[in-house]
Image (cartoon, rainbow, N blue to C red; front, top):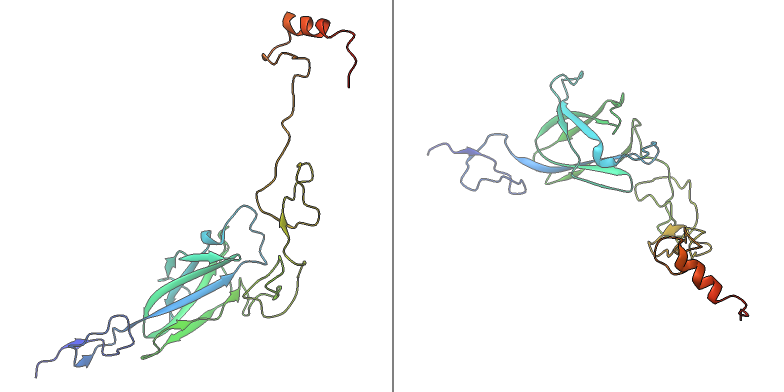
Length: 211
């Protein structure tokens, strides 16, 4: 019988039905996540972060691949990859370029089907603290300890100078309305300039009693 190498694991993404010798090439979906909610991102996005991935023996990350996020939510970047079985080392890179000093490893075993690696706080070994109440404006679905809750989400107009300001709102929903300001109050006839026509209009109204 001819030897047909390939992936023989039916749960792998590259299963080869005709293979009769497994060659170790099976790949599995693996998801990594880093929580940046404790970081000062200012105008940056979690999508600007990166992940360095290499073999576990490459402890200095000299041969590491630099990988961009595939998704981001709640200031948490997600990296979805297809990896062959083996042992890997990984670390994350802040959007500003700071590289983690934490050394992390993960093992991908034959037949694992898929793996969601536990979310970690940037440059820490564990998940970030945060608010675990889904109704709170500061909710963090990845938090493992309940800290930092701010109160229930109340949508509305949060700009106090808007005509429809919503007292107590803590999440702006884009409905604010503002009165148009008049930068030229003496332009009575509205032609964009203060001229003779405005003076005549004022003289014509001289002596009228305002309601």
